[in-house]
Image (cartoon, rainbow, N blue to C red; front, side):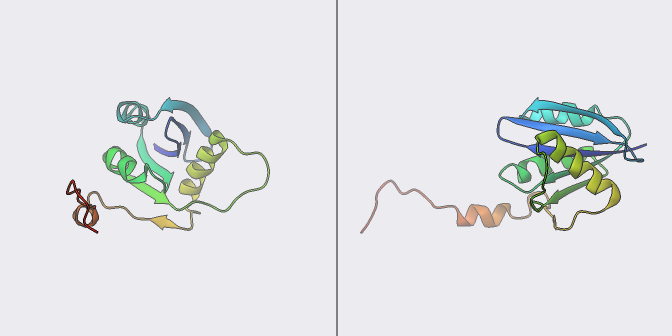
Length: 132
């Protein structure tokens, strides 16, 4: 059975929301932002996992960490601001639902390690002294 997992990630904690194939909200939980906790929480969701989260400082790390656990992993750009109440759980369930019905607009594709060489080449090298 398909499970759609939305993750609202922050540096200290992540909110994980799970939606079933009919749109029924199955569960949500707040976990510490670390690899072991994320892998444990997402890996504990039974069925075929579809994972979605927003682009941000943690996106590359999360994609590389979680993509092996799901049938698909989707990274999306930040969504337009909504009116009404806002919380991490509402955001995570919104992401889950958008993946379930295919309504996300701005998917960002991140292939594991795709830009690692470029990032290393662009990293400033410290020489220990400065020349003016």
